[in-house]
Image 1 (cartoon, rainbow, N blue to C red):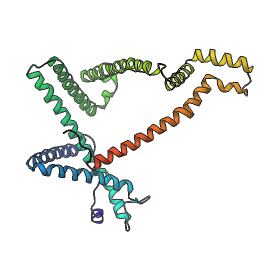
Image 2: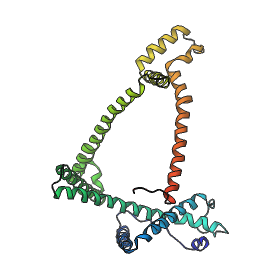
Image 3: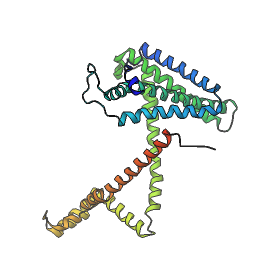
Image 4: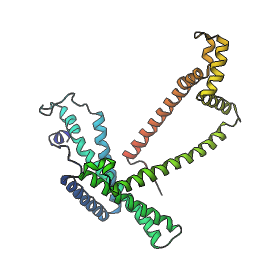
Length: 300
């Protein structure tokens, strides 16, 4: 089967953004997606899960093969693959096409999310349910940002001179005000408020209740003091220099705050982060296998 697929040419889909070819591809894909969803609605309920499971497995199986199957090194398009090289070459050449399908599915899922937001908040707005005013603000903000962003993109594409602020028009100033002036500023304000919750959580975690919390408090205190230039200079530079007499080879220089902090970060924090990264990698691999093999079940 793989050798048969290896003989099938799949040229990468490469076209300029916004071109007629891209628009036609997007339109055909959208129509095919709606037809596929409509066809799935006529499939018996008992057969829907096997179809989804099979499609999920095949999609994941391609990337598993792409990662595991040996690929020819420095293979030129005019060369003829030999033996098992057919499969490796086909897997490599098929990647742009598969990536295009993946991006198309991502765009469809994004559109489904937008539809869900419009449906949920539109229903709340029409029926005047609780907090419908917030739904109105959300819908107006979303539609305004989408409209201004699309018009700004179109004008910049047709008139590259508008990249310079001196040539800006209404939509460029509106996009700059809404995105850079409001959205990013509100994001920064929201993340800044999260710092207070982190501070409260740190206060509760650093309270001395056990040996572990005492070690955690002492370590955090050393690191924080070492990052404060004035404190580090007063406690480390002055005190240590008075003991060592300015000798850089003295043993007591190892107890300077910056040296202690470096030791903690190198020999305590570093291995801990590596262990966490390893655990996260194992968990991600396990979750990926469960999703690929459709073993992950949610809901009732």
